[in-house]
Length: 130
Image (cartoon, rainbow, N blue to C red; front, side, top):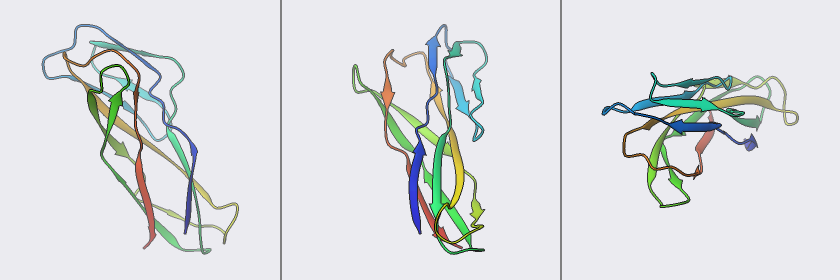
């Protein structure tokens, strides 16, 4: 199996307002649609889900595994936990190129102590034949 990233995930711009003590969940679907909590944050910009391409043997089912990871603020090194949302599997419709594309979304929780800044990190995605 060959897995390659084709598009980086981007939540767009998240502007902090008065965030509830329990936090606000900001999520992006596999289709790239952002859900921006219940009022304490405002989402804008050009969000996009992550894109991947997997190549392998025709007519095989490929399982997709994506694990939670930290994203880190470039200003002060604080972390937010990114929880991915990936399809459980895809069916390969050809052997080798062009492969099969899939997208990964996910969510983060913004709390009253979340600091301003640009958060970046690496997503852990692996694939295996079923």
